[in-house]
Image 1 (cartoon, rainbow, N blue to C red):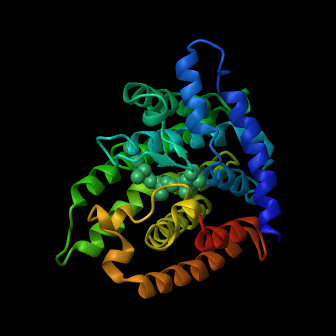
Image 2: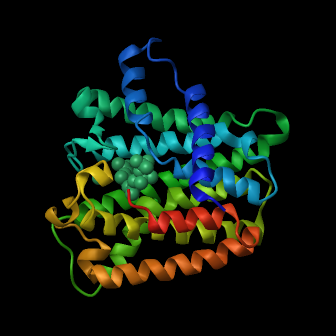
Length: 298
Ligand code: FPP
Ligand code: MG
C-alpha cells in the first residue's frame, strides 16, 4: 500500500467536496465566506473525512457516496481550530503555516467563522447523502457527531484543557491528561471512523469495533501531536512549536518525557495495526493511515 498516493487521491476527493459545500468567496456574505475559505482551504491533512471514507469502504460501502457528509466533519474540525486559536484561548497567530483567521481578518469575524462552520458542518451531515434510503443513517450520523463535538466531547475536553494550563501535577495528572485527549481530540476522530461505518449500516458489535479503532487512533494522534510540539520546527509544523511547554500545558512529553512518549506511540501503532486487520484484513487502507498518523511529521 502506497500511503502517500492513497492520501493524495483521498485528499483530492475531500477538497472537491469542501468546494461544493462552501459558498463562493464572492457570494453574500463576502467577508464571512472569504474568512471561512481562508480557514478551510489552508492545506489541512483532511484526516477526519478521509477516515470516514475509508471506514465506509472497509464496511463495504462506496466512499464517494458519503464525501459531503465526511466533509461536514472537516468543517467542524476547522471551526474548533479557528476558535482554539483565538486570543481568549490559545492565542495563536500561525496555523497551517498561515496567519490565523483573527489575524488575517479580526477577532469578531473569527468567532462568526467558527459559528458558521460548526452549523454548516452539522447541516451537511444532516443533509447528505441525499435520498430516503439514507435517512436512518443520516439521523444516526448527526447524533453521533453532535455528541462527539459537544459538551460531553470536544468542548468538554477543551474546557478541562484550559483548566489544566499552568501546570497540573499530583497523582491524577495522567488520568486527566488521558481524559483531555480522549475528549478534545479523540471524540471527533472516533466519530469520523464511526460515521463511515454507521452510514454503511453497521451497528452493534461491528460498530463498536470501528469505534475502538477510532478511539485508539485519536489517542495516537494526540500523542504524536505532543511529540511534534516538543521536537518539530515551525516550518515543519505550520504552527508555533514549543507552545505547550511554554504555556505550562499538561502533555505526554511533559508528563512522561520524550523516550517514554515515543514508546507509548509505538505500542499504540502496533495495537492499531491489529485492530485495522480485524476491520479490513491485512494491508488495508485504515491500517496504512493509522501508521501514517503515528509517524507523521506535521
Ligand atoms: C490538529 O489537527 C488538531 C488537534 C490536535 C485537535 C485539537 C483540538 C482542539 C483545538 C479542540 C478545540 C475545541 C474548541 C471547542 C475550541 P490536524 O493535525 O488534523 O490539523 P490539520 O487539519 O491542520 O491537518
Ligand atoms: Mg491550539
